[in-house]
Amino acid sequence: MTQQLNQFKPTSEKGMLDLAVNWNLFDCRIDPASVADFTDINAAAFKVVGVAGKSIMVDLVTVTTDAAIFGFLPYEVRKNSYVAGDFIRLASSYAVMKMEASAAIARFADLEVVVTGKKVATQATGTTIGKALDIAAADGDLIRVLIKTV
Image (cartoon, rainbow, N blue to C red; front, side):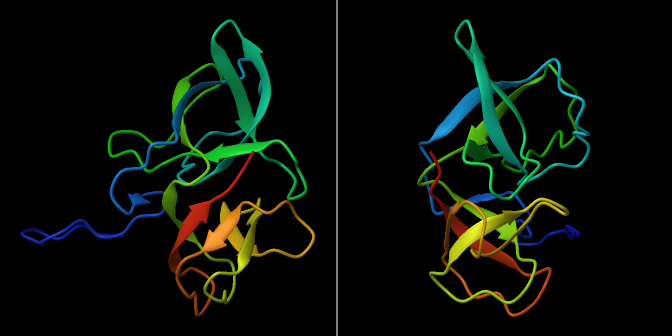
């Protein structure tokens, strides 16, 4: 989305946190052994792959049925591309994030991750990641999602 000069509030962006304070943000480290592409990954789903010392090691979710989904990468004004080994902050259960719908979604529908495109869809066969707080009319709509993982 394009930001305009003198607009009163920021334009909604995929991955932005919403609804005041979101307490469940965790500092994690991308698995240094990961071979995933971490370019333009706002609102991408991450899974826990281990713990190293005091760091939670995470990697991108690659299948919708992954039971270890831990959280989602919030929108960051300064950076949206990372490399293996970087430290990131993930939004987990009960945080509210703006996510992109892959199709029409009803309000309060259970959601699952659509791995390609980093989108969400009405839960069918994948792991439930939260509930839609808004209605999505079509593919590409931004909706608020109440995250419910781990």
